[in-house]
Each structure stands twice: as structure tokens, then as C-alpha cells.
Image (cartoon, rainbow over all chains, first blue to last red; front, side, top):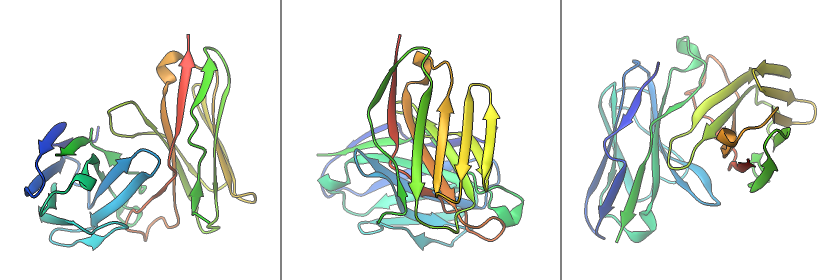
Length: 116
Length: 114
């Protein structure tokens, strides 16, 4: 079974703090994704990575950065947290179709971040 | 027009009812269609995966794709309280060439009452 883990289930931070969210997958998946999920807005893609040290902006990258130094780990960084970044953050990974996968994304349990 | 439209609900049904969840889409290039189930405070988990048009059945769940109408459905037979969750549809264009990006619906919240 694919396992995607996220470093924290719940996190409370103050405005202006630098925040690190970590995601690890154990299935040697090429692609990894960070989303945020808000009521009424659904899942919105922040960043994704299709290889180590590679990253691509998603739909809402402003205020975020990412790091992928190892294949299994994808980090989301909030450089200076703001209250409008209070959200549920979900990490996902996939083995894309051109590498024998199905594009199916496997999600972690999520991190509920509150910025005060 | 958004790429994928999904009624957010909430949808409340009695135990044992047949549930129909739907998504419409505008991009005729979508070929791969998925349904995810998300329990409260958890990440989405894959429920069904279908390619192109047709039906796929797995136990009490049936996924249906009608590409001519750009319409996909998930049917749940004999619904149970444990089916109470948010259901998200997702789709993608390319298999074997994409970066694995999916387009998600916003999700329909389902509540099955005992």
C-alpha cells in the first residue's frame, strides 16, 4: 500500500512566522503535489514537483515555496505566515502514466494549519 | 465556465437509499476519471478509477462515464452511515505523458442517516 505521511496533523503558528510542512512518500513516486483545501473552494494546487530539485507553480503559489531535495520528500514553506493561509494542507504523490503508473494521486492525512 | 462542476450538497439520505453523485466537465480531452472519498479531517482516498466511457462496478459502488455528455456519475447502492463523507471527482487528459496533474471537482458532502 502507498503511504504518504505529513509531519503534523495540527499546527498553530503566529503571523510572520516561517512555517515548514513536510511530506514523505514511500512508493518511489516521481510526482508530488501540495494542495490547500478550503470550504467552498475545493482543492487548489499550490506547487508540484516531477523530479528531485524540480518544481512547478500550481494555481496559487503566492506566499509559498517548496523544496524537493530527495525523491521521497517534498516540503512546503510559508515564508511569512499570514492569517489567510489558515487552511487544510494536503500532500499527494503519483506515479505518472509514462512511468507505468495511472496518474492516480495518493493523499496524506493533511495538516490543519491555523495562523493567528 | 469552470473545467469541472460538482454540486457541493449537502446531500442527506436515509440508510439503504441509492445515492447518485455527479460531475460535469467542459474539456473533451479528459479521458481518465476518478472518484475520491474524504472523511472528515482526513485526506482523500481513491475510490474508483475509470478510463473513457462506460461503467465500472466495485461492490456497492458503480462509476459511470458519458463522454458524449461530458458527465460522470458515482452510484452507491444500499447506502450505509459509514458512506457519510465528501466525494470528489477528478479527471485528467493524458495517460503516459502527463505530469500526473488532476482537475478536481469541489466535492459533494453526503450524509447517510441511520
